[in-house]
View: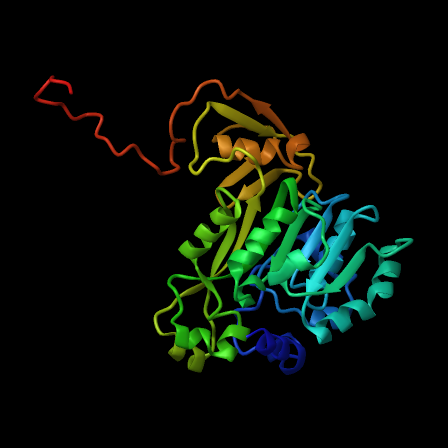
Length: 347
């Protein structure tokens, strides 16, 4: 399958329009600052883009970033502008043709960004073997990936290696394709469906188990959209299987709990993140308007306090008192508090 993927993205696909479905297409318009950065990216790099989401979070100044499956380098060159000249971006890809395009335009982008030296490096490698590429453990602040992990055959290995490469408080922020059930083996062995980011898509519950096995507790969805596929022949093969483009953020934070627990804590956003002056979105259900004090669970508190977002918030409360499950977060107590027993005997 690795050779099939290399052939598909290196030889069969020459530009975005060659895709047979819309699975590897970004369904959401990028925000203004990403669009501005895109204007500085070379046309050939942009034309060979096969991502399915927005994998560039905010607050990136000075970070060291790793892009898994960097392709022609589009997301790397966007991130290179946002980390600044003192930051660094490393792209890993296994397709020679894609790497050739990415490397060909290194000097073009350095000059376009006004940097003294390039802050981008591309390395040939398989994302299932990150442990063989010479990276030091805990050497990256952020790992991104855009519709590539579904192409890997050992997804657990990818996530586990990524966890080891992240610094404490670091983050994996990536978009990929997920399914509402497991694809049957006969479809997984179809190279076209696999190359189109469909039959390699993880069943969402398998993905959650993989992330937790890797060490990422409490995965957070940033955005999710259904994928229509838009190819009658492939839709017929898939039958009732539904697929979705989902952006996740996974934090490497010690002490995250499996559920959202309430410690009576709160935070207030200061409004000092350049791209989010009026409000900050942590995920699809945490929007923090500037200046508003908002109660949060312990995990959300840590995702803000123990990461690069600490200086953007004021924090209230301690860990002294536990009040049970955070209201509205599921995990309800399985006992009926209103039931009465006819017997007062004890064991």
